[in-house]
Image 1 (cartoon, rainbow, N blue to C red):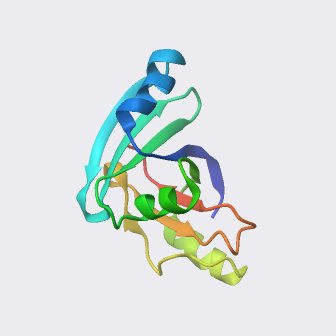
Image 2: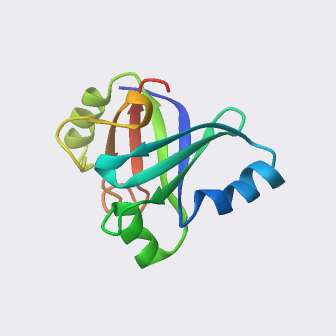
Image 3: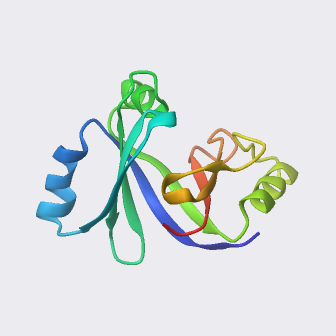
Length: 135
């Protein structure tokens, strides 16, 4: 497994509409796509930020991981997503190097991608998401 690029930066927000004022209206980034992930209790918006994207993550469920994140830490950067060719290979390599994947197999992410997160306690405090596929 080899990283190809930073796919996106995930930012936990209370309101996508409020944050669009900063990223779209003020900074001029283009809104590419919005999607609801009911199984995760999330609404997401992807913004084109040049060679990468910004993902705004809004909770639509009080018990979602984003709701808990905001409750503990407030709004802000949630994760760094890295584009890879093979997420399953990334899971195996992570385990061999004592980085803890949060699942044993990839999950479906936004836009039909395959994803897995690595536990931040094993990656020096950064929640890393491996992403296979394009949206």
